[in-house]
Length: 376
Ligand code: GDD
Ligand code: MN
Image (cartoon, protein in one colour):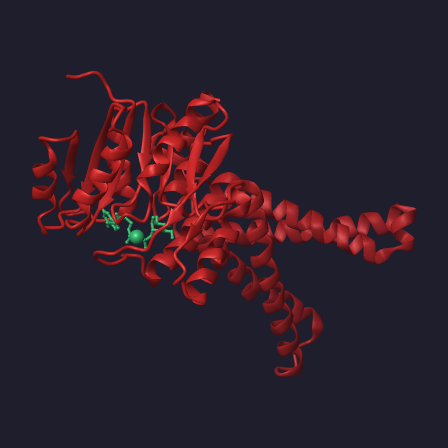
């Protein structure tokens, strides 16, 4: 085997046979003095892509991995990186949207030690994109970008043009590549501390068509939720738990009043009964929203243990209210403050009990977590 290259360029492709020779040529022109390799990862396009790569092999170090039976930009990129041999990996699109001329600047920035993850960016000074982006596409792209801001401090986290030192690739088992944004996934899970951006002009594709559709946007939202969960595990869960709890409070209130005014029940009975639809509501949405990475326990058993912990939580809430308003002079004066403290304590108790007893974290997430702690 020959010495390993300095740069591996990984290019996912799906039906890009016309673009393959063009992008390869553009890269070779820009990297003429550098030891590099190009790895195309194609999802069995059957449009002559493999032959197009073979035709180039006499002239330049290109290879193609053809995957069959799977499709997906993100997993293709991972596959390419796993097979790369270079010190640095650059990922870019095949459709000439990303200028090969930026690769050397990107690598120079990595080599300088001032950055450990570099993005070819449309949104930093000097970056741009083709004029004919409609308002909808622009707003859409901007909104998607803003939603990712708290996860990473870069202006173009959506970019499919990015590079890093291969040894900093996060372990594969940590990645959950839902959807298109593999750069963002690697940036967040690789825990890069010095991300940086190089301006590029993003050119709209000439040949073939984009594979980014509406379904991808929904998947992007799922992906974001997972990344938030990853980065701010407990905080993200606590916020979702709080949101679910507030909607449960609305259910509780509606049932409480309906039972009295529509069905003529006394207020104590109404209070005791309205607890159950509310607790069931909370259990269900915490199961499908807040704690998705938890043990898939039997529903009835889980509902029961959630109800029990909620009853305890309610006891903590009322009990602390009682104690405070009986014994602490400040709260004797300010009963509503005691009410707030009671609600907060009850909710804190509920959250911890739910996390520990009702929705236990998944085993493999624990292992991943332990791994990452060992690494740092
Ligand atoms: N192997 C493989 N499998 N490659 C794929 C697949 C797939 O299922 N889907 C797309 N690709 C390849 C395309 O052939 C192209 O080289 C690259 O991935 C990007 O696909 P496009 O379809 O051109 O995506 P886009 O132009 O809509 O989106 C680009 O810009 C976005 C930002 O505006 C991508 O770079 C996105 O990652 C980026 O977020
Ligand atoms: Mn494109």
